[in-house]
View 1 (cartoon, one colour):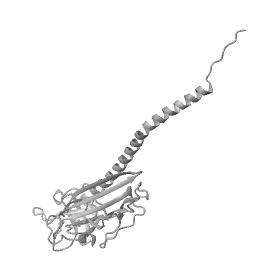
View 2 (cartoon, helix red, strand yellow; view 1 turned 90 degrees about the vertical axis):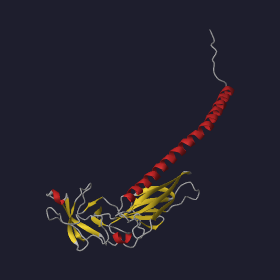
View 3 (cartoon, rainbow, N blue to C red; view 1 turned 120 degrees about the horizontal axis):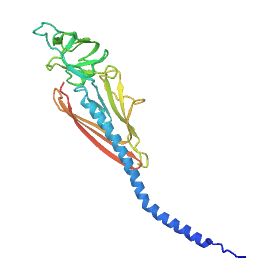
View 4 (cartoon, rainbow, N blue to C red; view 1 turned 180 degrees about the horizontal axis):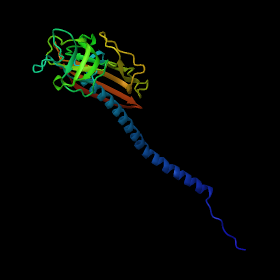
Length: 282
């Protein structure tokens, strides 16, 4: 009878192998931990940067398209403007060849006028026409604002592409450029509000938010609106500030707006500042 010798590991050998594997694993973990942490940090900074950049560019885009001279600040965390959806030129007198046309002038209010340019986004009844806005007080008091009741397409080419029927309006005295802008009647006022800016007690995460708030009316007295239910542009806001510097003078025909936003998440922070020139020529 042949006896076969059985082979295997002794307990000591097994313990040694376990210790070696643990040591090697620990070394790899020490080497990989900074790499993984760095990857996560880069991802957080990229997400914060994208969020801040998107929010700031959205605000600047709307600022540049706003009704001239409608930008105003309630405070450094609350900025308001009157948005536009389109604009054009109105007839300022009768057509000399055909002897007609609906026009606006300084002397008497009219309830309709021909538009001599084509709309990109055609307005609808209820939208607002703003003419020659020289300062925030005019548009927010509706001194130069009329409401559209009908948009018609002219059949005669000499009249211009469109005719607008509006509440009585006229050209403001001193205004000669013949332009108008159209503001959405359902949302004639937009405010960007930063609230709750700061960080958690350990400083690792921002606690604030930036909202875009719309109103259904134009109010002469500016107040910072509540943000409940308003679209969120940015979260985890550690600090934010709106700065607006209009040119001094009777007509603030240009200005400069600066938007500062700092976001913090998981100990990572990004700070962005975006500035834009604002053309306030009516």
